[in-house]
Length: 241
Ligand code: ADP
Picture 1 (cartoon, protein in one colour):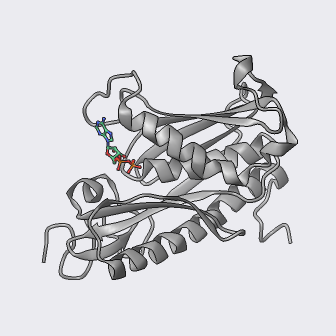
Picture 2 (picture 1 turned 90 degrees about the vertical axis):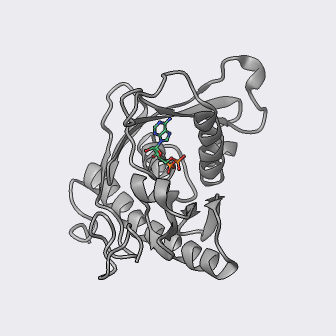
């Protein structure tokens, strides 16, 4: 037995291999943004603000046939154990790009030529899996902004810890584990929009981790839907039927 999973198969925070951390999503938390959302996913605390579709500045960036999507993933200096310098790191620049690419296929950009949609993801507290939680919250915030979408996008990671494939790694599991596989999907369309891998997995382990991450995403999708229902109908999805 390794040090991250005990004899009963319990992980450092007491979860089983296929259990998500507690997740809470709130819609429309910022009055000055066109759309917004707040997510707590385990120890991650993330706010997302959406602006647009609006006129593109600088103008040369505008496209004649569709809107452009711009995305900034940023970690607050107080979001990590050791203070993180406020200027964008290489990691934040990379994450901004992959998160944008994960969200783009879900948005009907062609309905807003020459405009820009800005997505600001602010990580207030990070606990592993923040890119997935950021994507989950960003798609809810885009819906809150009234931007036409083909589907929501949900992010969640799976990985390998003490030789076992587990769902939704926390910070310690992410750092001490053998592999991390962040995934984002459009659950209704059934398409993967983000797939990254850190560490090593055999092909069988990869397939198992991917299936587990997709199952996790589907569960989180229900939480997204519930959050939107609560905001717009003041009731849960089940009660409104
Ligand atoms: P993700 O948050 O999507 O899992 P990483 O795997 O790159 O992204 O990071 C894992 C975790 O490592 C983060 O959630 C965060 O808790 C921690 N971390 C990332 N960057 C820093 C940093 N510059 N300083 C301290 N901790 C960091």
